[in-house]
Image 1: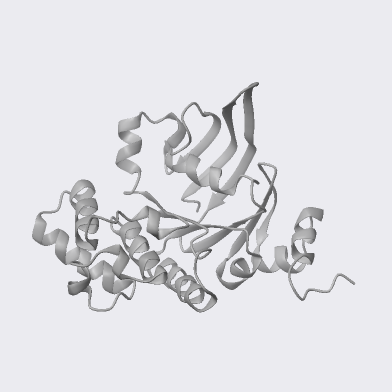
Image 2: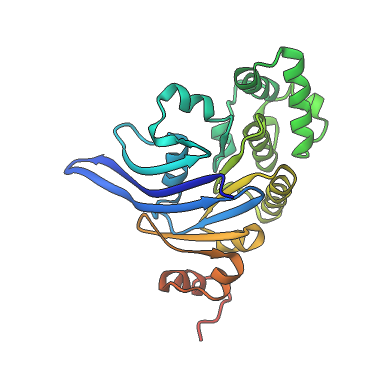
Length: 262
């Protein structure tokens, strides 16, 4: 059963000549307990698709189609209702944790504010939940971590903290937008294992946005490939990566280092 369904999604952005269409009718479905990889080159519309789900498109953007979360069409919700769902039912982890985390606020402040706003927890309950979340994402000494600031952690640890904040209110859907791009290979592998474990343990539906097919092959259950604002191929990971049906998917795979094109 799908937890999130995107059907015929188009996005137009203001341009000097009128409007430019960025997404051309995207279809996508996410299921609980599965990681759905969304691959494609820069500018293909991957990140824009994730932003559309959360209602975080640039000013003046116009959308058509449907984004259904359960019985709700997110594109038709008034801002107040969408704000209530954002971070509560659907969360997002961004590419660079140094920009998504506030540098002047402690880790504890950022986690507990999120919990108190969405779940209406009192201060003590929010703090207990924050410690639990930091332990869940394998941050050492969670109690002490609440008092520390983002700059006191490495990039990989900051990304784990960002994931903890995204999961704080037990969302049904997690959108991870290039979550390992800024990390070295060893740290990247740890973050990917964390996403896999959290998906399995929490029955999360994860949309993993990445241009890196190596990342995709490591943890995705299903894969969709985007080109020019349209999904051109979708299927199980094994099928898409070993027996692609679309010429563009084959070209992406042939461009991988060490892959023979003979």
